[in-house]
Image (tube, rainbow, N blue to C red; front, side, top):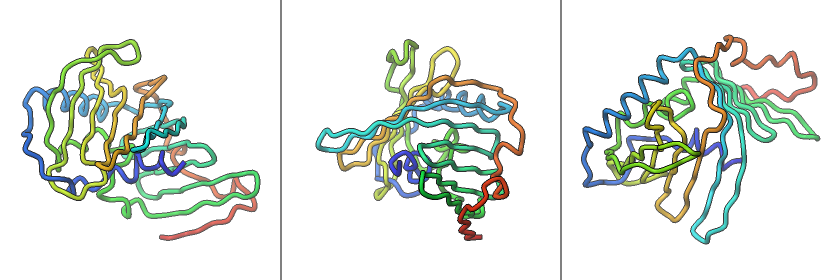
Length: 217
């Protein structure tokens, strides 16, 4: 479960990356801009996603989840855990057979981190990028764009985005931590321009009697 969260909360610090000799490829920027502008203009989108982590020994772990995004708001569903962000407050809700717990933070505490609501803009600073070519992915033609961190010390030194050629949808991506670990993600059942209410991104403590509340605001 913790590895899934790395997608959104450790895939950050775009200002701390390793020195790269690659430059910003104009062809890649056109593609990245088109993808970013499309998703930022949407009313919202939902998707399921598959996550796989493989370490340097070749061992792997696979999980699944669901995501909904509207502007700066998002809701992320993981096994035994959900994260709600209404752009002002973040609730991390954990529910098992034995207990229920919610941790509450100000959304401002997450500034500088890559989250589901800004993943489509992460290339804008801290990375060089280049277009690698095309590859079939999920039965679709995907254009591969490689992002390379500019400075040393990043949690992930390289990211490869898979962008559908005909729609500019982001289909999936791979992140390399520089120590042999590879984090792979793929969107499935992507639905765009979904009408999502503001309440969908807020967590109501009153609907969960007996829940332990950890308020860190």
